[in-house]
Length: 77
Image 1 (cartoon, rainbow, N blue to C red):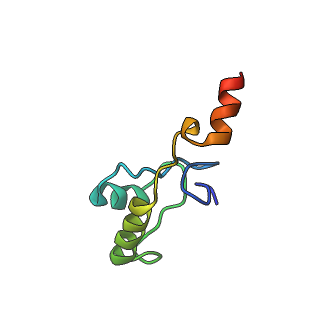
Image 2: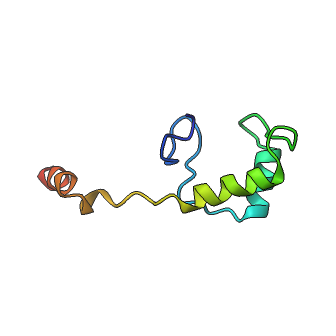
């Protein structure tokens, strides 16, 4: 998946946390710059709204320092 299994990026842009409102998200997926467009034939407005709500509900990753093992690794450097 271009955006990573958790929406935190990869080959595609980071989606989490979702900072776009629904109208902005809809406009973006209908006419993106660096990915194929999702026309209404492929993804209905209701489906796009559901996708936006799902991405919006995904939790942001905790800071590395709040994870004990990663915190220890960071402090050893």
